[in-house]
Image 1 (cartoon, rainbow, N blue to C red):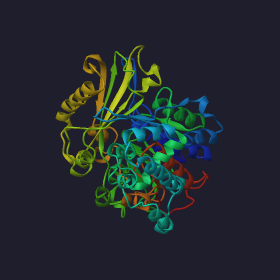
Image 2 (cartoon, rainbow, N blue to C red):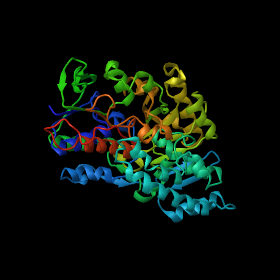
Image 3 (cartoon, rainbow, N blue to C red):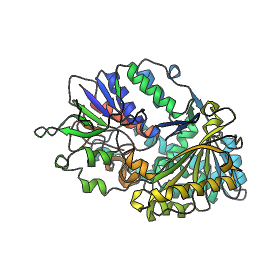
Image 4 (tube, one colour):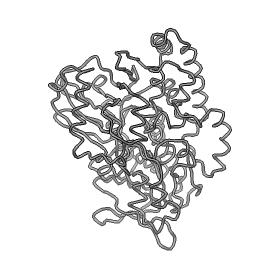
Length: 505
């Protein structure tokens, strides 16, 4: 056997497809009964709920996979644009309808801030993030193999103010508080605190403005199924219900020989790619005696992103005033983020992401019904919150909030529901501390400083996914899969890689 990929999230699927297309024999092992990882699909009572990512940007990363295999995306899955990208709602009743229409954006800025210079500020901000994009996003699928290879970009990073947070970067251009939130919340989509994440992530604004926000008809799960089918059509082998318990290391060569799953079955491999959580992989799959650099202490000392509480629910009525993607800003912004990321306490208030996919694809619910999920960022399990007792009252407070402000009589119309919390991320998704996005995207945990795409201790162990370079979010994890495939290279007869150095952005 040539290559084993652990985990079928978007990073693992991308790596597996590319490696199979290169001529390797790839086996993809998935713990659960469906592929997708965090993009799992729940189906109940006639409703279909995407478990995780719902926002598709950088669609060319998807098209490139199919083209690489001589296929067409549209033969496997249909992607459609979403407009508005998001409705961003504030508790004073104001709504910012956010899309790529420059005149629409400028008109709303004038309405939100009629007596300020925020229109000019926004134009300068848009130009600045375009410059960040040119430097940052073009490097997203390239590894930094040494510190020196990263250092040559330091002048650009200093020029682009990478040392600033997303919020402080935005705030130097925008003065009106609600508009500051509109143009800085994106860091939360990749597990970052806008007041701590490097301003490089402000490039998400330009990415969306240039390429749009997309949705896969049938839900994100339809995209997962399309990629899994593409992998199998290329001759790859996908095995479900196969939870890897150990990456077997040769004591003499210090190289991975394969993996062992829970029932004791051993899968031989020249190379192993882990799309599992990086911290979990090291702490639970690789014996400590083989980890001189990636020690338990080093892994545990990193700063991990927040977790999530997500309620999936179906209603027997439609709420036509709600868009596909809604960002519901609470009365506090910076203070709430401090509670989540710094103080690590479960606040009584919240800001929410509300997802209504039936606004675009009614087939995801019975006729006349709506499918939903509402997501609330919460501290990871380092907070000590007992979710066995807190999940129900927290769920009730969210439903009450939605009912009072946005969705009249909601509690009377919920006909099915399911929820996940940090315990799910820890126990089912094997995420350290129940973090939903792995290593937090701050400057000192980005680029070369992030867990590397190839292990510093085991030369034929690679990593794809949110915890390695370049980070969380669909573009990030898919790019990590490309990086890994490019590093391993296309010679299936050799277990050597094109570059054995460690890497990142």
